Image (cartoon, rainbow, N blue to C red):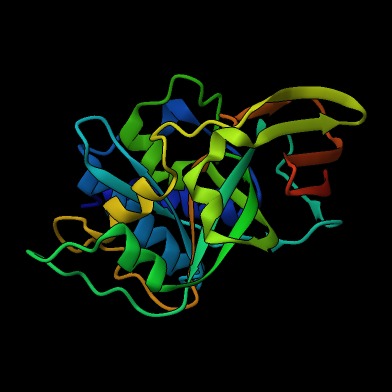
Length: 251
């Protein structure tokens, strides 16, 4: 008999393959975070996705969580193509790219300095949040986590000095869509230091179905501007001033 994990993984896999949305009322809710992570892993395997990256965060209660970022990985000037009717949000983020594996180290947690030593680049990135779930505004958190925290795609921006993580509030986030300014405020991360989320995941208490941190993976650390809703499709300019501007289109 199919389990909640199997049923949900099959539904989310079908939505990804069909580039479509699924009605939230038809979906079972995972029992907890562990079940949600198991769903993620099943979808990842069913789709044949590479372990290219992760988005990391910290759940209520302080538990580190993550979701796979299979992409698409895009660059400035590219077009992100969404499912018909999907709600899209734009997030300006900072990420690291691992230069070495970071195996789980129980009882000997990594320090922030060691995390940086394991990375070969710091990057500006733009995540497009596009859930496979239609009308996901009030989705239960385990279901949202099972859907890879709404990961849709990722625009990889320029490399930046690691010192950028030390004072993100000196930066400004601006998002423009078709000439209209949707967001223009100082950068702010929910955890203060964006590397807190990556370090928490590196020091997770036990291995998960997502597996270990591997060289070459991009680890994005969470939004500096919340999730900026795109009310329409069209050309976007996302700026992290005074560092860079990334131009792309939503379609």
